[in-house]
Length: 423
Image 1 (cartoon, one colour):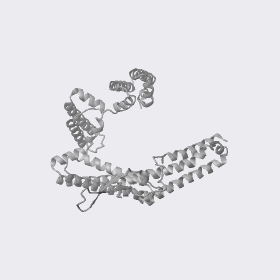
Image 2 (cartoon, one colour):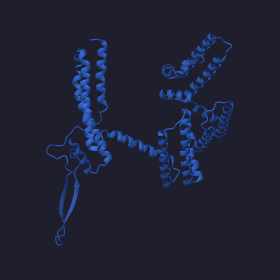
Image 3 (tube, helix red, strand yellow):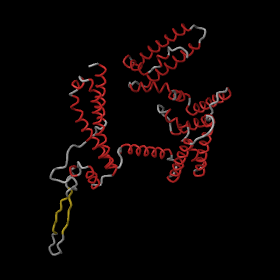
Image 4 (cartoon, one colour):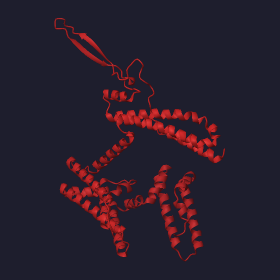
């Protein structure tokens, strides 16, 4: 057999084997006892106890003692009966779905494993017939597809949908979204919170409609028209919220929905107080609002943007102080985050992370100056850049150790980039 054919068959068979893994969950293989109906509810024992006073009208006192619960009384290989048994013992509907889905998944996983098992011992036998490879793979694929369709049919019968996990994921996603929105609006009372969420949903629907609108004109004109509609919709929502909320509440709402909230992620590696986080978000939001959506690249626009950035940095420095401002600059630098991800995985201490980061910063500064030095020839600059790369690698190796350095080389391409010439 030619090697390519063998490889193709091997890959095909392994794909079929891998396909069964997705079904592998926790199935309970036991069935109900033969002498007991699967739908029989838990047995109860009743004792009639006569009263001690025979002069009074005899009466019976009933003590009910629930026998130990046995899952065999509930579980059934007849899935509709299984569902009804679970409902009979008061199992919540979502839990019923979870139990049945897991059970059906594992049942068909076992069927798929049983089907695949004989093929594993026939590998070379099948592989010795290259002309049959494609046919075999196609037949096996059809068999597994049929199992999948049978599984989906059971779900369709029980839950009126062939893939209940998808609807569960959608429901779970909606729950997470609602939880996030409720958390974001936790400064409002329940009535206002519900009204704001309704306004947000209405805005989302309006923006979705705008994205489907057809506009005439050039690409730039269409973009301008769509932006105008978008801006108008957002302004309408803001006007509704201004009427609903107090000025302080509206300001807080806008802040929590602004670019200023990016500080939550940027400062994940820095300890700050709630007051500091709030103030930082306000500074960043104000800077972003002043900058707007302008993409102009003229000198005046660039100068104004740099001025706003400088003013924002001065405000942050005043808020945090010199030492913590230096920490703020470090943790908001993507290069530090990249370095920290590697060092944390390697379980290296924070001082090592900082040292590697500072080494990178200084090396990149020096490399950039060399690239801009037109007094040297291209060959001289290339030689100098290679020296910077080598020295930087030696420094990082010394900081993290030989074993960790190999991992660093694989995941930190910036060291190799030091030797690259100017673009």
